Image 1 (tube, rainbow, N blue to C red):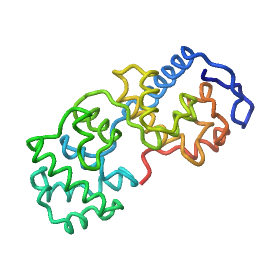
Image 2: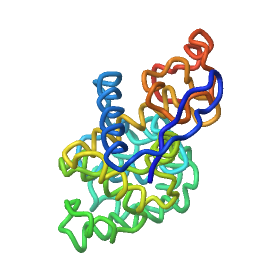
Image 3: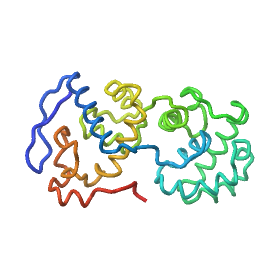
Image 4: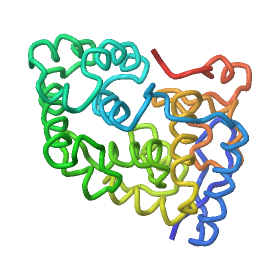
Length: 247
């Protein structure tokens, strides 16, 4: 059985029992509030097609979308297609993506996935989860990003922000991304999975920060069991709100 909380000023709320139906209703209400707060929520990686999104998402591991967006223009100018990237010189590729970190491992993944796209998928990014996760460097998170944003197939993207927020919200205390994906998928209508993912990620980047969430400037305060772990004073909290993703 899930739980909700009662408020104590400036402290996380003590939990009360919550039925599964109550949790579903609360989760959907929170998602509706986030939809009003972030009407323009979207994938913050720059891309022109499914191949570019796939590459950018692989590069985004352990770095920011801002850093990836600074890196990919030169990368895509040099290797505009999977066929071009598949025959890239590894050292040249590493140099182009060095600023994203872990560049040797990422270069191996990019070379492998480009080769697989060329040899197994006719140079096209596949539009199914089962096919996408066979590509080097592509797990469920990356696959769901591509499916939701390039192909319009609903998917839940469990990144660090998403996982932090669903735990703070009391939607689940699971830590396994696949289990989180399925649990949250049962709370939110399937048609809304992609946008709900964007909204949670935006909220995690802009208000519900890892170290000091802006609780006093959060419209979810009345519904959030973790209200009070960050500053509740509206003036102090407002100073923590970011207008965009961290650089």
